[in-house]
Image 1 (cartoon, one colour):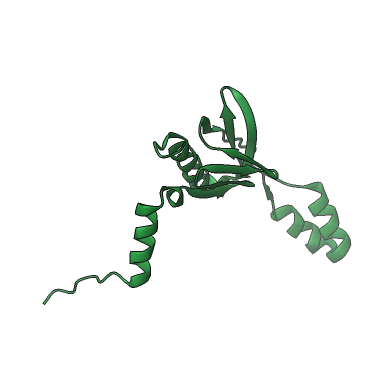
Image 2: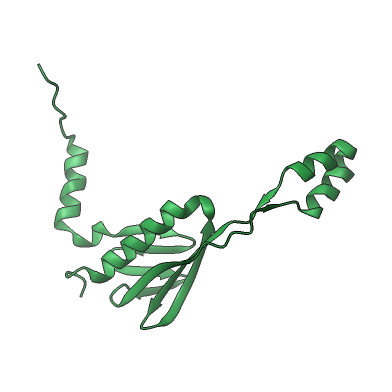
Length: 137
């Protein structure tokens, strides 16, 4: 006898929302910007997504580096062992930038860490899908 996956009432409700309410298909956030349905929110402003486009413009990589503040602070607080620990614990400076524009004019630049590359791609895809959605009036 094979086991069959049974949809829970909650998952059926979620599927219904995605099918019946097109605005629910487009939800994402990255670097202080939010896509909710057919609107883009950034820095206390709300823009309709129609006509917007987003892209990952730069993956700025400065690598890891030793911060003098960490070495001095560790040395002052915990002596030579603290200075060594401050030197070993390096700061990561990898950044990802997403540009949101309308007709060539940049509306916002969102910034996130290198570990958020997947989230940035998801945000860009969601915003572009929302802008191209035929239900978006």
